[in-house]
Image (tube, rainbow, N blue to C red; front, side):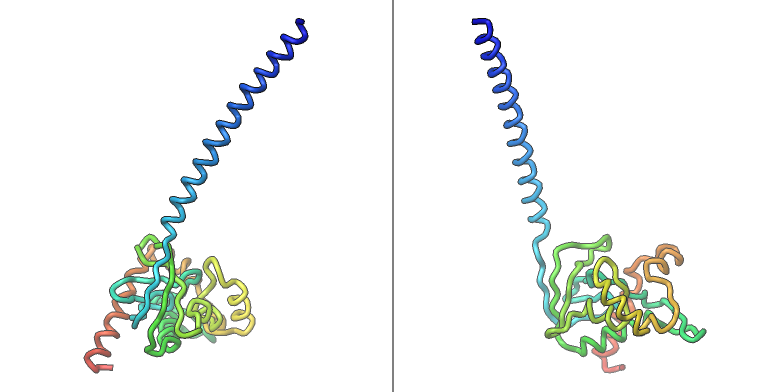
Amino acid sequence: MLKMRGASRRRRSRSWRSRLWDGFLTVAVLGLLVLLSARLDRRETSALEGRVVVNDGDSLTLDGGRIRLRGIDAPEFSQVCKRAGVDYPCGKLSRDALVTLIGGRAVSCRGWERDRYDRLLATCTVGDIELNRRQVEAGWAVAYGAYRSEEEAARRESAGLWAGSFDRPQDWRQMHGGMAETEHVLPGILDWMRSRLGLQ
């Protein structure tokens, strides 16, 4: 009789613990689902298409909205690099390479996040050319979270920036007082105004 009571208490005790554990797991799973759904809401994809103003080698303006090419980092517009011991305007050349790549055609961009300057982080294409990838392949931007193999290939071929020496754009910005990336938007807008007025 005592053995049966002891076994019954152990079963009740295990049953109570088991129910508590089940309740905890249920709450944890529901919490994770809520977090996941909130995260998915924030990742709503924006799709934009149209003519752009090229601000520098990794940023564009489209219909007044600013876009940063995701996964790459190009020299700032005013950045200077060295080739064969001579300074050259690598930031301007990086921008010019992107302008040439786009060739005045409509650009399509897709992204879901924004950076600290409220620019849409996007992958952009012209036809079947992915601009992000092509800038790194041509050596006019470095990998910044993506496109590592493209950067390695550009380095091996001494393409673009890799034909000389340069500070990585992130390092250059830090050396120049954390210059905000928004400061180089002006040259792109001025070029756009000049072209509209027929001054180029």
